[in-house]
Length: 499
Image 1: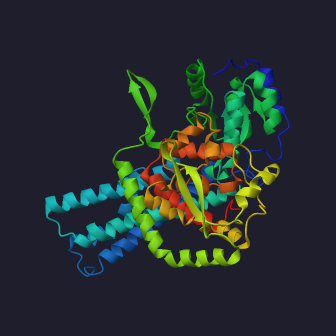
Image 2 (image 1 turned 120 degrees about the horizontal axis):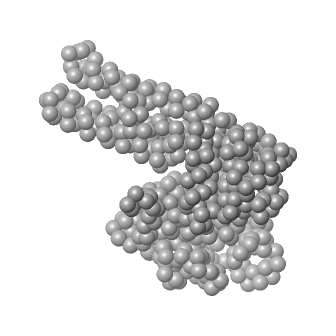
Image 3 (image 1 turned 60 degrees about the horizontal axis):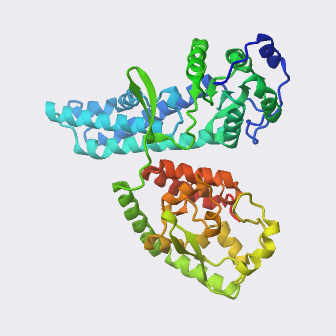
């Protein structure tokens, strides 16, 4: 961390500075709104989950005991009677109601799943060891269904919570600490994703960066020694430290001591923005905790499974969507002269080129008209996009809005040149202008959909598009693929960023 500002007068002046009425980090949907304090909304969120789990446990007990309810001497009777209390207790013991994992998605769901597996193991072992007459349906059907229902409840609850956060509610007030550029970067990232539940309300930076950060963000800014005072003044619930240097360890240690007893959460951004999840581990070496970053795996059994799933789902989709494919082909053919399919050379895994196919959504000589439209390009970076492209046909505009023009790429997936999920397939002219980081997109197969598809598509900037593709490449997993495929349907139905 850079040298600290030691003047108390400087810190106090920043606290008295007028605050902006609508800071950049506050969601646009709720200008000027104040996020609900964590203590108020988290108790309601967790309480609702406990009540839902109790109701689900009662329903599972009624279903399991429906044939033996008249026999209180049966062990199954008492097990089913205890389910409304037992299931919430099991989830609590697994940490499923912990405030720090509430609404965190994968972590919250994994704890519930862990509790479900644990109770199934205990039931099976106890039933075998004590020769209890537990119904197989309870262990094999009812309990797994109860776990699945609890996971669905959390998914729905998290979806509702994200909607509230986009409206400026149920969020944590965050004070960002670090170097000026790093603070601005994290503030911009959090402002772009209000559903994350983190709203930046102030910053603490070096004296040299202070005026610049204050001018750009319009937020209250103090020095690095004024973290606790500014956090108390702004009622911040979280302090996020986002830059590092040779003095970072000592500064973080003193900052953690300073925040003791305040109830303020301390977060540290490791500087590896696109690396997350299973690749990051804390490993103690002789009492020194170090952050271990595993290398990304681009081969192995998971890739074999991914290829099998890709081709299996693509084949199933072609069979199911055959009538749609025929109808779209007829509509394209009748709308304008030219071929039904549009073929274009794209760059795939390891830089190998392939012919990507789509339903034609533009006039037949669209490529010839491209040179005269470069001045109207609305996209930054190396991409070419026009919101009202005159080359798009009437049918093509609807195909693009619903992403139906992409359906023939299912045959590219069957052929092995593409995957269902992956980075956006680039043109050779785009790849020729790639820098070192963007080239990493070519380490995996391009996808029919991806993080870019569910995050805004054509509304994304070039930097944001590259960042999302790199996040996928660095953190790829089968679970991520499943999540992206699930969210793609919503993105297509809402036509987000499609033109």
